[in-house]
Image (tube, rainbow, N blue to C red; front, side, top):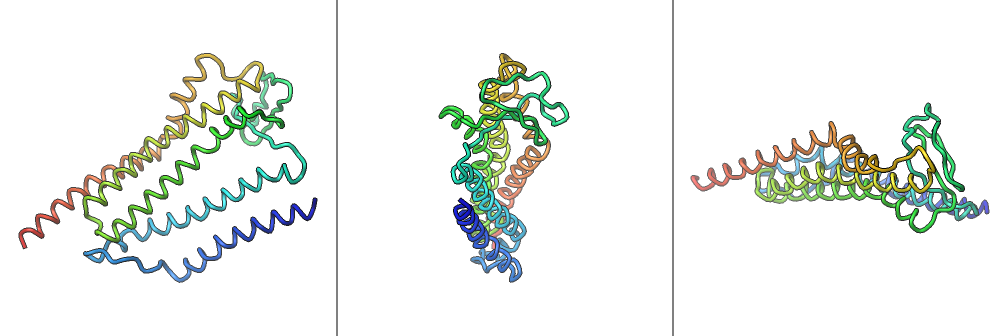
Length: 252
């Protein structure tokens, strides 16, 4: 059993090293040369964003590896996997007072009070996927669009119609994706909470209000909404700059 744990740990550490070490080497050497834009400024202007996207991408890989290790740990140790959902008692200080859980479910306090089960059904696994996956998918999409924006700016310059279109798409994805991911995660959490809590959990009109209004607004405000609106505005500025650039080229 110990050998299995060490084997899994070695695989995870090796994969993490394969991600972290190249990043540290690349960061110390500076960004790699990118294809020059027609005006020679596209790659330079987006260099800070390129570094942040690279950093976030590598940490996202590490997070996925850590989640896989956590999910597989129960099977290697012979323990049953555990799935949890957040309960209305949102702070550990509340202690879940007033909540009555069903047979096979337990309350846990880890910053937020959660109700968990050690023997999830197939439907509970699906709901757990709704809780955990939307946020990760959202970040993957954002990182891919940001990387596409960097590459396009390096190819066609910072002021081009294509660069503006990708920037606008990124802003819309941040605004809409944040709200949608939060709504899906809240829906999965509320439905699982209803399955595991006998009384005191989400029920009736509280469920649509939670995943349809409260959680999306809480996730969207203030920073995602501000960042998305800024990107959409910058996209309009970039598009106007592209038009002006074309006019200048036509008059020369």
